[in-house]
Image (cartoon, rainbow, N blue to C red):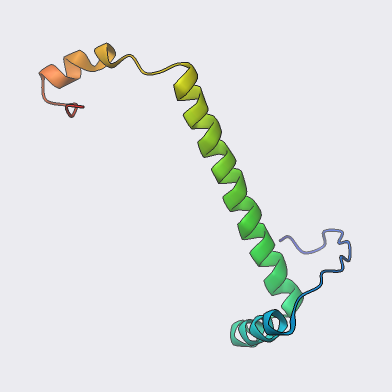
Length: 83
């Protein structure tokens, strides 16, 4: 996260085990609990975004499937695997 960005405080309730684990990880990483949570959220949001992109990519292939005949020339010279 870029420093200097505006931040909004958000209340999130965690159980005691989550807080304990989080505090241990924060100590080990020598950073604050808040910074650890922000980084975890950033990684989660990035992973979700990648998953959405993967789903859209797959849906696009379902709508417009590849024409395998386009690759016949490459297969003929053994530059494309048989499928």
